[in-house]
Amino acid sequence: MAKIGVWIEMGQDGVKEANLGVLTAAAGHEVYALVCSGDAEGCREVCGKYGAAKVVALAAESGALWDSPDLAARALAAAANEFDLQVVTGLGSLNGRDLLARTAAILDAPLLQDCTAVDFTAGTVEKSHFSGKTVARFECRAPLWLCSLRPNAVEPQESPVEAEVVSYTAPVSGSGGVKVLEVRRDSSGVMELTEATIIITGGRPMDSAENFQLLHECAAELGAAVGASRAAVDAGFAPHSMQVGQTGKTVSPRLYIACGLSGSVQHFAGMKTSKVIVAINTDKDAPIFGKCNYGIVGDLFEVVPVLTEVLRERA
Amino acid sequence: MQVYVCVKHVPDTAASIKVEGEAGYSEGVKYVLNPYDEYAVEEAVRVVKEQGGEVIAVCVGKASALATVRSALAVGVDRAILVKIDEQLPDACVVAQALARAIEKDGQADLVFAGRQSVDSEGMQTHYRLASALGLPVVSDVVAFSLKDGGAQVERECGGGAREVIEVSLPCVIGANKGLNEPRYPKLPDVLKAKKKPVEQIDIASLGIEKPESGCRLTKLSAVPDRGQATMLSGGVREMVEELVRILEQDEKVL
Ligand SMILES: Cc1cc2nc3c(=O)[nH]c(=O)nc-3n(C[C@H](O)[C@H](O)[C@H](O)COP(=O)(O)OP(=O)(O)OC[C@H]3O[C@@H](n4cnc5c(N)ncnc54)[C@H](O)[C@@H]3O)c2cc1C
Ligand SMILES: Nc1ncnc2c1ncn2[C@@H]1O[C@H](COP(=O)(O)O)[C@@H](O)[C@H]1O
Image 1: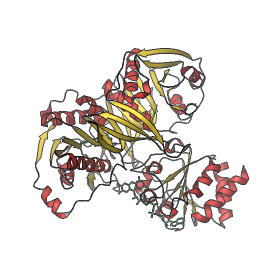
Image 2: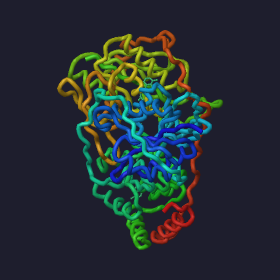
Image 3: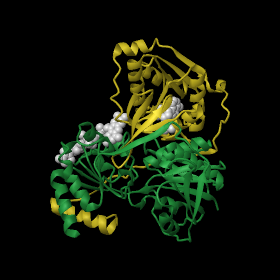
Image 4: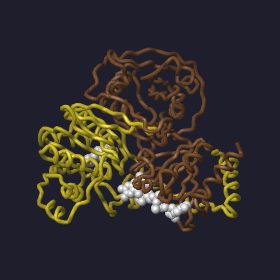
């Protein structure tokens, strides 16, 4: 049994859903849930439910940990030593990858980012290489190593234990030259693409930013996030934060609905590990039909509203 | 300003990758400058154009990586250092040490640009380790950069459409993301001029790397097969959609 620290990312209302898969992957080992921000006591129940016996309320000697990502990383590194952890892991969100990379650099320990599978007993992980075209398997023999897990890579499963909260104030201070001045949100309440379990994406034929409303309406019925191809982003129909693919976000939802996408390699690089892929395209010979699960030949401007309607009737 | 930019030589994202042996791949494909590094190069060149100074590209790679180094020289980089290593997918810990030693040997960095990730190993960490080795602060996923009051102010994508506005002291390391700028295409005269720009080639062994192994080893590479041909739905639009929803709900259980 290994001692595993799981960094817990907090969302608007407590522990982010997507953490539960990471806790599940570590369950069965001696799991320390590491809470850098927010209310550790409030995390106790859910962390315990998914197998963490210890919930560590992390603090620094000076300053709030989230004022500087560097301070949070130094606290995490100190906790790894304090609790004698063999692995530090966490959600491979943008913040999770940033924090773990900083922590790994401080600890001078190996790190594997955005893993799609992990076995803490064997000390092996799998991750994508070459934009989703190959799977790379790594063996980790270092006394301490780190990994971030791609959101939705592991299906959450309860394994309840009695959890206790312990406080640890790390002997660290200072911002390390990096200070967060403010967080700007462009459109409030946007669901984070990478953590969504269902995604509906629009490509070049969307033809305008206004037309994306069509996808947002359908997404509301699906409980989905909305994505875009690079062609749609570069044409100004959607912000880059919505881009999926090689130079956008990597996502792994259980359902991916591609509307008006040709199926380029670079787009697939970002969504290839989706469980089920559905494509809607006017061209029956579009390459995307050669690499998805279900296809509808049709005009997205006709098909999507009907889909929204059918989902609404079902509800 | 003395501005360094890290450039990696990687297989084109459109290339199909053939696995060779247990953990290798066939290199007989087109190679390019790592797409994210294009944004890093462009920003480095832009900063030096405004502030004056010199842009130096640093690359750790095989001898063939010279092509990528030249492509950076063709879009405004002044000179380059190629650290030669004979590995297809070198460990990020080793690469970061090599980049750090090469930069320290060369001069005093005011700024270091890199990409947020390389598209072959998808390591997402080299620039953090480089910053740590140089004792500098680092910010990655950067989509806006400006010099301000003796430091830099940057914006970083942090998920859900949100951006962090971050103040970072100089010198620092910046990991570039798409959106930071529009990389320029090289013009033919620039490509020709690039052939005359100085490239210092050094062997990694000469850098005295202290920790040549990280303890995590790539043991197997396997190709991911495509899903194959889709099940095509038929009938009128309403019929197809109803059947799709039924399948997603009852067969696939994803709704
Ligand atoms: C280095 C690099 C990085 C890249 N990174 C990315 C990336 O991160 N993400 C990304 O997406 N791309 C990326 N690309 C671009 C990629 O190669 C493609 O150009 C792009 O994905 C195409 O977008 P698309 O499928 O929306 O448009 P198109 O290729 O134009 O396809 C549109 C499709 O819609 C169909 N269609 C037309 N009208 C309709 C309609 N009314 N209803 C339904 N279907 C219709 C057409 O038949 C066609 O198949 C990258 C390229 C490079 C070189
Ligand atoms: N071998 C290399 N030579 C030069 N720069 C590199 C090398 N490997 C990584 N980098 C830089 O570090 C960034 C992040 O790489 P990675 O950690 O591999 O995802 C890249 O975008 C490059 O700018």
